[in-house]
Length: 171
Image 1: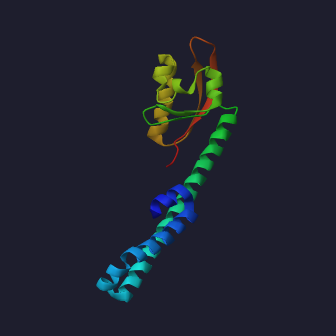
Image 2 (image 1 turned 135 degrees about the vertical axis):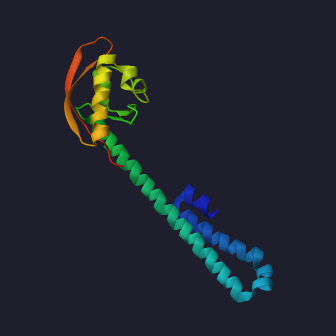
């Protein structure tokens, strides 16, 4: 009850659940507990139960705050990247696109699903895809950033030349 109340309603409802659980436990189990534990044992049991409940409620509250802060931070970063006039993308080690910003979509005329989860070889002509992959592998192998000129051609359209800076993101 305490954990569910904490996740659903935050700190306040979790504290109410702790108090309610303590009162309910006291009313329901007091006759049995008095016989088995004695008054002192029952008081210790209720104090331990309450303390654990309060710690759970507080832990859930801090976890929810951290989750919200992380979500807000990710949202701000995506907003910045989407408003940038530069082509910005993230790839995994296999060369699959994990993120493309709005400038990539504008220049290419593609939708996000035409990039996400795909490699450059699934999107671009072999000559361009091979060059892009070679640059990616240079970064993966050396661990050092590189700045190089790359070219893109989408669906037989004009070729776009740009300066690419590629680097590894640290976990």
